Amino acid sequence: MMTCPKCGRNTAPGRFCERCGAPLPDDTPPTEPFVSAKPLAKPPPPQTPPPAAVPPTPAAVPPPMSPPKRIERPVVEATTNHPSLEIDSFCVLFENLPGFLRFRFNAGVTAENVVLSVENPLTGVKTQSRNVAYLQRSREINVPIPAQEAGAFVWYVTVAYEAGGRKHRLEGEVQMLVVRPREAQKAADQLTVTITNNINNGNASDVHVSQRAVEELAHLAQSENPFEELRRIVLGGQRVWSAVPIDLCGAMPTLPVQPAASVCERITLDLGTVTLHFFANRMVRIGRKRETNEIALRPPEGVSDEPYRAVSRAQCHLEHKGESVVVCDGQIDDSHVARPSSYGTFWNDEELHSNLTLAPGASGVLSFAGCASTGAVSLNAKVCRPIRACATCPHANRTWCGDGRRPALMLTRRDGVAERFVALWSCFPLEEADPSFEGVVIFRKEGGFAWRRGRRCGWLVPGETINTDFGQIKIS
Image (cartoon, rainbow, N blue to C red; front, side):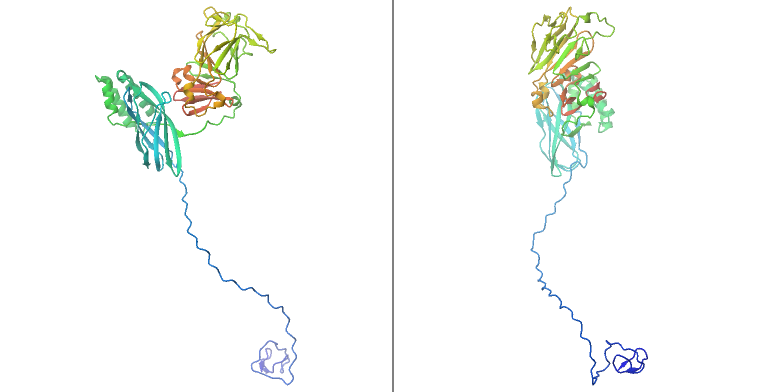
């Protein structure tokens, strides 16, 4: 029996209710077994495809055992903080006595294997401190200096160390004073100026200590033996720290993009005491006309130009050949024909009838339209070669400059005008023109003019002014 979902009364299972005739659900299971005399025919069940055979899942294989990976720690750059180097200004050296220079170095990070070396490029003397195995903060480093002759020298300072798994190298310059016993007072005065400049320029580590040092040096003039008093001050253990400019070893700065710097064949430097005109042409022509000559011979301002009219329009020319300078009277015209000057070219009062070859170091008087005493105009000539600068030049192109064998010719006016002309074929030591620019070299590179002093260098761009510790240079 089953219950009709419409009328709620019991009825026999089938397709319709016996009471109300309402259809009954076919899938309703009977509440109890019932067998009919004549069973009803049911439609066959739908044929469904058998399920696809699923391959058995293989047993999970455990991964092979491997050793644990090593964790690589990131490399710490040594430039997290800028390194600093200071020198004790009181470390003055005395003539023919060994001494030392005291530095204070801070790498900015933990550093190892610190080596500080000092080199004199003029004498070739090089000395270095003992290897400092570990340096975590500022530390004093003494560098022994052998006995030296008296004078003021610019020394190169190099600091090499390891930090963060890398090797680093810094370079700078310091001025070392070697004192004669009889010049102790002069050395004290110069040391006072140095300390005062460090205070004014902000390079003094402790202003109060530096001021007390200046006061102590001032009492040196009242001492009966200034030399012994200066030695007592130097060896007394007082420190007057001043900063040393240092930088990473690098190459020459990139050439400026200004066309005047990249294709410049001539440049003028005003040093304050003298004006220098540089020419980079292989052949330098001298004459009266400015349009066709690198050097135009003109009278000083306010002076009559009557004597200068004797100078030919194409008076002479000079060029370098190998290690020498060749001076020739007259010039070569467009037809490649040599045209002599009207009144001759003279070297040390002797007229040039053929080419004159000047070796490095040669000097004399080059006069035009007459001898040096009666000629219209004359120039002091000197063949310069910066052999001393080549030994430590980090930017020299040996193929281009001939390893310093190419000379430079400097011509100085003898009429009282502070003006000089320089035929620059490789390098020119600027101290030849002004001794206060000791160690400064002017050279040609990539079509432009540049300067170098030790390992510092820069480009000479027309219209700019360079303010350095060795002087001011105006460029035009």
